[in-house]
Image (cartoon, rainbow, N blue to C red; front, side):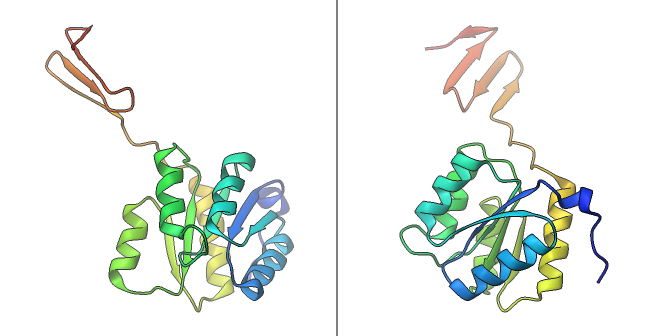
Length: 161
């Protein structure tokens, strides 16, 4: 396997939210070997708090987590404007689970058991692509503008009540 150049990974922060200790340790060791700074959290609430406080460059997120499931974490982060890549890593391999993860804003969905080499390649690819564009929160038609985030409607520049 071709090793990434140190400058490509050095300083990149990866948050792993995984409750299976053996998977979490294996990911930490291999991601650190690739040059990433890694933080591991074992439940959804702790993962959400870590994503908010440390602003990682990428999140690897399990779905079946204690306290708050991965889909809830993903949905909350995206709703709050978190635009960094999130890769879902899950034993839930059904089509609807994958669709749900991607629809909620995951960059990628990797099924367990997984190939470590493939996961590392997906991490590198996601980091190359960078943050997702924040979805447009306003719409305009003719002289009316709707700003969803601000919950505001303007007609001809004036706020409508």
